[in-house]
Image (tube, rainbow, N blue to C red; front, side, top):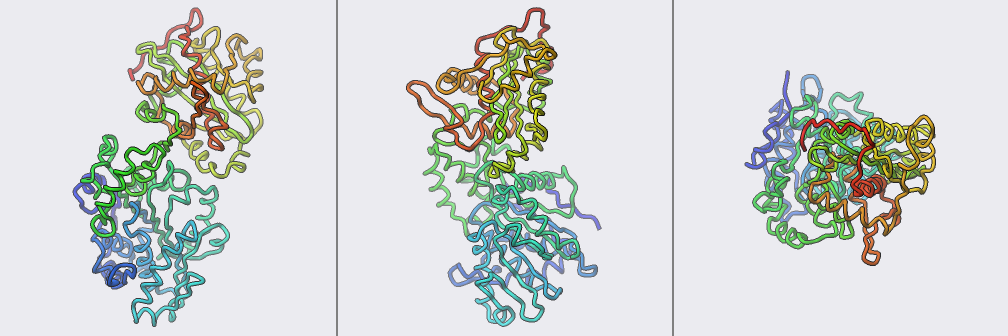
Length: 562
């Protein structure tokens, strides 16, 4: 039997309020499960209606797809993984409770443990309380199940199959043999450096259970997606779009089409239904309009969080009131990565400057190359960063994000001392060998902490002259470069590759007013890393001097215009 979980026309379907969930593979199995699910009562609604009385059709479609993927003859679950991305207040946790309680009722395996994994105790209670309420609101279920509130466990009195809700970590899930698992608020796991290992422990029991499945439920993250959340989200977008053929995985993603995102059509209340299939039931259009109106002019990041949580608009830059002014225009100045690769930059440019910043063991080392396009005279920006592996241990809060940047190819995890120094020098020499560095003031450095790099660049076999290296004054003295960069970015006269590393670095930057000048420093930005952006400012300081390449250099070859 062959089926597909792709939905290539999802954009049009969501706009028209049509279903993006495929029909069940086995309709009889789906109807049997739905008959149970629809009788469960939602106790926090007036009159305690059943799901059959209060749920929208998309809920039944989702439940049908899950249980309708079970082959009753072979005992195999044909779709093993489900991913639901949906806006806040669309009864996600209540649906989770109903699905897993239905699974326990249908379970034929004795002593089988079903799990709901939640990132925190509060989220765990959000799923357990509705499930316990469903049992207590029905006399037949009350006779069938034993509810233990202190253990957050519901046990079938005959089969001893159970539903357990746990606040997950590697210890609570170690040794679990659960075949059916639901993960709630998956976005929060994306902030945990140990999440991948924890899921490996939690899902290990499925290897011996052909009837097993995993359901991930989530809203968008209140930060740019990272870690296991970003990995799963990207994967299920590709499955949905048909880029990856994986019939054993189903992604149900309620998000705006790219075209609507680009023109900010998510701000139009007429489009709220696209990411809120429960609009008019658990989600109030009037409330969304009122809350959006209150936040439209906010500059402290609360608008972005509201859009992420209630309209599933992915956060690209976390914009705060003390942000660098260029952050507002950063994403618009991005281009296709291939058009601002280092190779393309070297081929297009008539001259280039380099900026280097950072480099402590628990810090990032940032390298920025800015080339002036020979055709348009736009500034083309390319950035790379390095981090010692010890930084992943010392900076656990950003470790998942650093690993994402490494997977993107924009950050190098350094395993051996001196690896970063040698690789930075190699890139600088590559720019120099292309004949693009000026004879003087070509490489701007923050002198603190990068003496080893300067020594390497000045070694006899590197070919860099001392006059080419300039120490860039930091603090308020960097004000000119900061202002130049933001004006260039706003006018799209500084074009970058639109890479997540730089979006993150830009969003981390905090400004401090020093007299008439603006300062961006690592101290002001706290533990968040801004080294790649500081390297950009160092390179901007030198490119703003309108340099010329070394005498006799051959101008860049014009390939494509940006």
